[in-house]
Length: 233
Image (cartoon, rainbow, N blue to C red; front, top):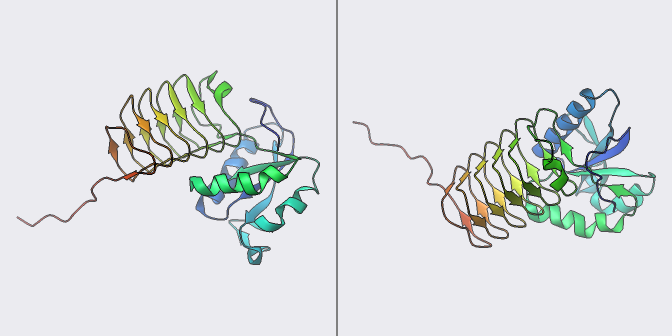
């Protein structure tokens, strides 16, 4: 498995998307937008990869499922170089795909897919790993380090001096303040807010709308109290 040269502009790189759910269809749209924004067709989108071979041939949002996880290694050999996007929100699933499937393939590359309308200052991209997906409306400040296979979803804000480690998923409209470390395999739910100078432990979860003001221990989930019906006056 090859790494991603930061800032490299591909020219028609064949690309497949692991996953067939909603996030996968979002990534299809992201790739389409990247291609439309360039004078050249940067990616040649081949189709989806499912974890179930029975899905092969089905169409999802205008793109076919062309292969399954168990058949992927042989499929990858048909291309001199093949691009990969892991469009799955669950951090553990992303890690499993890399460690059990991608590591066996010598001819794949995992580009960082960054929407043209994401606000990523010059210099931030020097600290990206491989295989990350950054959607439209995302805003980065400065001195941000991203590991491998990180997803930052629509309209999230990432403050200065932030580290987000491998396989993390940041869901839409999240806000991470300054000097925060999000450890490997963590997930931040939609509309969650993370106070500055905190550590989110490995495999931790900040649930939907959570307001996090203290460190989160590893393998721990914190949630915000759900809206409840009030008594009528």
